[in-house]
Every structure is written in C-alpha cells, then in structure tokens.
Length: 584
Image (tube, rainbow, N blue to C red; front, side, top):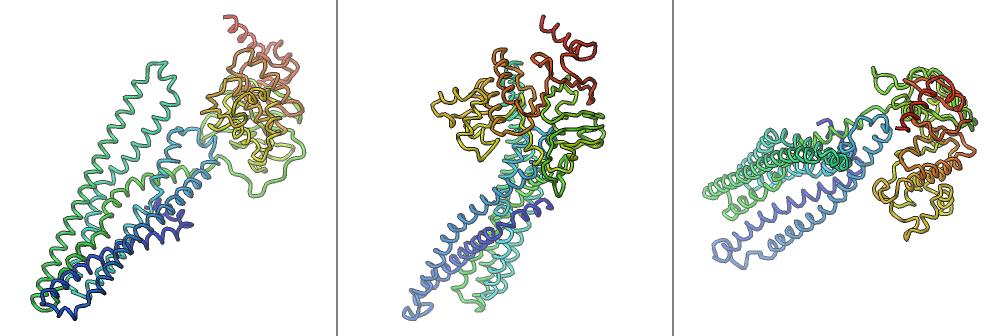
C-alpha cells in the first residue's frame, strides 16, 4: 500500500486530469442510474395513463419525462466519451512522468550501481512495470472513488422515495463493492503477484536469449533455453487462467448480488405500494434503479484482484529507484580546473562493503598532455581506474586530484565533459550516423560532423551511402563492419573534442590491416591531448611512450615502455609470453 501511495504522489502534477476523469465516470454512472430509474417510472406512468388508471391523459405531462430520458441518455453517452479522452490523456501523461522519474533515478546508478542487474530485468521495470502502473488511477483509484460517491447519491435518491429500499440498496452495494472484492483480493492477490514476477523473469530470459542467440546456437543450447522459456510460459498461462477464473467469480457474484438486491427492492416496493405507502408507478423506478446502481460496483472485484500485481510492480520500480547512488555529487561544484594533470595517491576503491578492493593503494601521476599506456591482465584494475576518473565510482580512501582539485569536489558532469572515451564496446544506437554523432555534441552543425568523420577517415564511406549522414547503423551498429563501427566511435570522440582522450582497447578484434589503420587514426586524434590508453596487449605500443603496469589494483612497474619491455620485470615477462603465444 505504501508503494501505491507514493505512486499517487508522483501523479500529483496530473491531478486535474485525474479529477476530471473521476467526475466524468461518476457522471456516466449516475446518468445511467437516472436514465433507467426515470424510464421505469415513465413507462409505468404512461401505461397507466393510457389505460385511464393513473391520471386523465390530458393531465399526464408526457413531454417533460421524455425530455428527461433523452437528457440522461445524452449525458451518459457524452460523459463516457469525454471520460475516455480525459482518462487516456491522464494515463499517457502519467506514463511519461513515471518513465521520466525512473530513468532519472537510474541515471545516477549507472554504470557501477547497475552492474549486477540483468538488462532484460531493467527493461522490464522501465517498460512493463511502468505500463502496468500507468493506469493505476483508472484501475484502482477510480473504481473506489466512483463507487463510493455514486452509492451515496443513489441511496440518497432512494431515501426520498422509499427509505427501506435505500437501506437494501446500500446493503447490496456493500456486499458487491466490499465483500465480493475482498474475496477476489484474497483469492487473486498471490496469483497477481506471481503473474508479474513470472512475466518479468520470462522477459529477462527472452532478452538474454536474443542477445546471446549466436552463442546458444554454437553450443547447441537453444533448445535448453527454449524449454526454460516454455516452462515459464506454461506457469504464466496457469496463473492467468486462475486470475481469469477469479475474475469470472467476481463478475458472476456481483451480478448475483445485483439481481438479488433488485429482487429485494422489488419485493419491498410492492409491499409499500400494497399498503399505500408508495405510488405504484414508483415500483419500476426502484427496481430498474437498483439494477443500474450496480454499475458503480462492477469494476471493484477486478480492481481488488489487480491490487497484488500492481503492488508487486510498484515495489520493483521503487526498489531500484530508492537505491543509493555509488557516489554523490557535491552541492556546490568547484569550477573547471585550469590544469589537467591527474594525481592519484594511495587510492582505495571497492564496489561493495567487504568486497575485494578493485584499487588497493594506487599511486599514479599523469601530466597534462602526457600519453600513458595502462597495462595489465583482466581484473588488474584498469576499468576501475577509468570508472574513478569518470566519476562513475567513488574512492573510499586516498586522494585523487584533477588540476590540484579533489575529484570529490567537482560534479561528475563537469569532470566527464573533459574526457572523450573510445572503447572496445562503444555503444552505437539504432539510429542514423548523424544521430550517433550528435550524442557527443548535440548542437554540432553539419560541417562539424563532416570534419569529425574526416578525422576518423570515415567521410568517404559516408558520402558513398545513398542516405549519407542519415544512413541507419542498425542495432549496436549491426549494419557497419567492425572497422567502420570503430571509426564512427573515433569520429564521435573527435566531435566531442575533449582535452583528455581515453582509449579502452579500441583496436581489439579487427583484422591486422584494419587495426593498423585505426592506430593511424588514433594517433591523429591524440595529437595535443592527454591520452590514457588501456590495453591487455603489448603489440603496437610505441617504445618511447610511458607504460604503467597494474596488478591487483596497484602500480607495479612504471617507465618508458621500451625499457620495461627489454628489462627483467613483469612487462618483459608478459612480452615474452605474448610472443610465445603468437608463434603457436
């Protein structure tokens, strides 16, 4: 319940739309009630007038009740139509607000705070759970408010005509609006929660299967994954069948209670008419009015049944929204440093309390304009160093300064604007070449885009495409070759034109000719900048450049790469091992 109350607070900016939808829904229910009640009285009165048993025909006002019937019929139709429009507007605005809220909460968590999450599960929270909660006002709030308000108005109307009938109507509405929904809640809450959990797990498995389809086929494991997804689908169908049965129970029980209430009202009305305490023409008014009144309670069983699933979805959304970011920015950031030298002294970094240190007393100095190659095996701390410099992860001890200013004293966005990163897995979005370049600088003009492509030796390729800059790159750059995708990443870095260039295995994977061409492009791009290159391979490193070897989060060797390669230390042994592997 607490999660749903928080959800309604997020809907506060759209309260006028929600209130409008509630008023129109109540107007529709009350108009239907008035229509049927008035129609019952009108038909009975007209029949008696025609038979001469009620009033003389010339004394019976035919036109006023006929106009009333037409009026309430028009109000019912117009209220339902306008209500659909207002409810859709409120729902769509609410969905936009919820997605914006969750994405704003996810952004500070990335990447370190989301490292243990499955991409399919994150997608499910951002899409499926949000869509489930997008109409919470329509599926949960509106049925309760409309039912309560309408029940009071309709019972009050009955009280003017026949107070005993009003008590019977209230009792019937209480059973249909509280008793039956509570039974639906007890029967369906667990199944509703299990449905949400099964759907989310199955979506995550499907996303993983699509992303790893090539590996599944290579290992002949596709049938195994298909069986797992099929079993989850069977469970989902069973849970949905159970919910459908419970929904049928709720609808049937509500119809039964409504019919029984109408029968009871009819009996009491006939009795009152027989004892001359009620006009005979008022009996159809009470009977048809009682039948119409249960439209107000018709949606309550389904609302109670959906409560568990919506509570589960809200819990999943707020669970990730309430996570503390891996680091927090200072309230007031210092201005951009005048110098861009980097000094790390005794830096300790770990991603979780009690976890193994990713950086363990790291000491490293990188001067402005210097070109440094960070070496090390996987897990040595290179990626953690990059996360530290980009303010994706915070350090728990030691000092890390940029231009003499502690990194903690500078907002993360102000630090990251000084870096351009070209990595082995730079993500290309499923848009055009132009859109992927504009990520680096959204206000860049077309001439700047072409200059960036020229710097990455990609301009000729793009000009030969029929769509030019508007050519699609496909999912993760699927319509580009490996070399073209790397060059597009280089062009993005060139467009950003930041003073510090970080190269994280940018030449890993392509063939030797493409790798050599990329190294030329990178050398051109690196001119005049501070360059931090991270690599696991020693081939292609300039002998005169500075090399830094990391092991277990510490610097174990530092110096000119050529000297380290020819010496007797760890870099020399790595070079010998790499040469031996290359000869095999």
